[in-house]
Amino acid sequence: KYALQKKILEKIDEGLEWVITGAQMGIEQWTCEVVTEMKKEYPELKLAIMMPYSEFAGNWNEANQESFSIRCSLADFVG
Image (tube, rainbow, N blue to C red; front, side, top):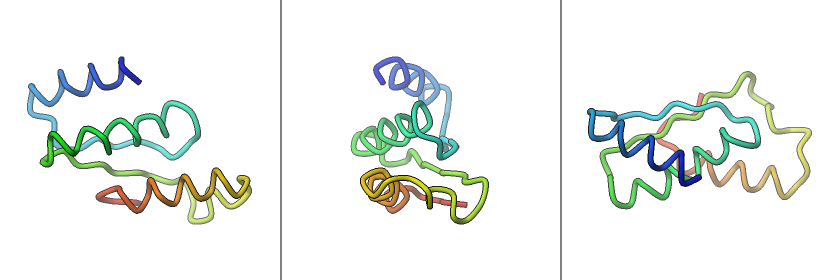
């Protein structure tokens, strides 16, 4: 997560406004977490989560579904 934050900070210095990520568990979910935390210090930073289909997380266990739902609620765009 530190490496993600460091790279995103570099890109913010270059004018980054949006971070667009997928919805898979692992690095894509970590990206959501990192960006959500960074938005506290960089409110101009926006997060978009792109899902391959509408019921994407439907087969995940309840804890993962809840975590994903929270991440989506904190994103600026979910599509």
